[in-house]
Amino acid sequence: MNNSIINRSLYKVNSLFFPARQKGTLSYEEASAFYRRRLRIAVSIFFFCQGITFATWASRIPDIKTALSLSDAALGSILLALPAGQLVTLPFSGRIVARFGSRNVIRIALILYTIGLTNLALATSAWQLTLALFIFGVFGNFCNISVNTQAIIAEKMYGRPIMTSFHGVWSIAGFTGALIGLLMIATNVTPHIHFCIMAVLITITCILAQRYLKSGTTAATAKTEKKKSLIGKPNMILVQLGIIGFCSMASEGAMFDWSGVYFKQVVQAPEALTILGYAAFMIMMATGRFMGDRLIIKFGRQRLLRYSGLFIAGGLFLSVFLPYLPTATLGFLMVGLGVSSIVPMVYSAAGKVSNISPSVALASVSSISYLGFLMGPPLIGYIAELSSLRYSFAAIGLMGFAIIFLAAKVKLLRS
Figure 1: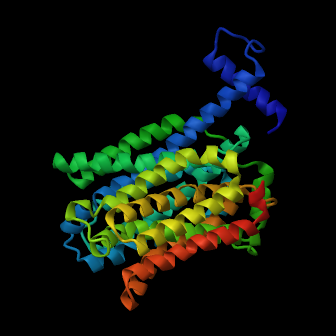
Figure 2: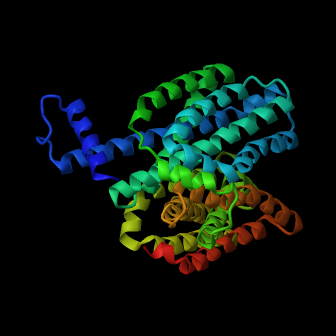
Figure 3: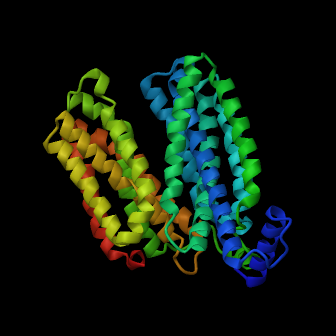
């Protein structure tokens, strides 16, 4: 950042929040720390708003399924529209964010994301819900790229790892959205009213917080990105980071969709405890994200990624070879800890690739990583159909070893 820009920004902070103190009475260190902290809080708010928007939808899926009289197979097919919307926009969303700035994009995208949320409850047929989910996925992707670009800017200003804490806020938002959903269901609030209430609250919050975001582009950056094609030659470092993300998100997707089935069919847990594996995974994933920044400082990204891969492999193989309630729960706890920091670390590393804007790098890595989230759950089903559910979980466990191997190969992760 140019020194004159910093000085002007600090002067504005000084005059706005300390009107009785004139320029020069607030030290550079104090004002700089305040400026960074304000940006971090604003970015955290946007992560929370994005997370709670998605969780609000997820909490009412059963109600919408019942209202539209959808079968399990029909719902499963319709739900693919959301990631399809995200994937379709990934090739060019990074360029758009780089050209217009992450702050400008997130201002618009998150509000449209909440509007897309309200439209989901208006669907009266399967095709309407499919279209609404596709649009919801499109705006969700723009939110994801732009808010993570803001996180990279904040991390650079701090000069130390803080990315995983932002993703931890997203996880907390997921829990909050689920609890609010339970409250709305218990009080017989319809999905549409529920979604509208959340949309209004989220929009007001974003309007208040958006002024504190950092400009994510410059005239030079925009001019450079304008000359580039939408889909350029793949950068091998980004490809390697994307494959690491792919392995992590495949494991994460398997936990989301199959943990309850595994505990019911393989572990043979009591009906009331079939959710224990999923709960153990989610709790440890959220906890690990708030611990991740300190662990990166202590071990470094490369070593922590290798440890994470080891936890994923170890946890899954523990639950496969010892499919009992205590050991399987411990195994799922290990998997949650293993996947918790991988995607934030991969995103943070992608933002450091030279000669590529952070938003474009994020879109490239996300394109590969998100395929893992899509392919992991079906892979479990196909392998289970051919052999057994235990073998399918063992196959996902091999991806932990792939993370260990790839982390050692990416030199950028050593910094």
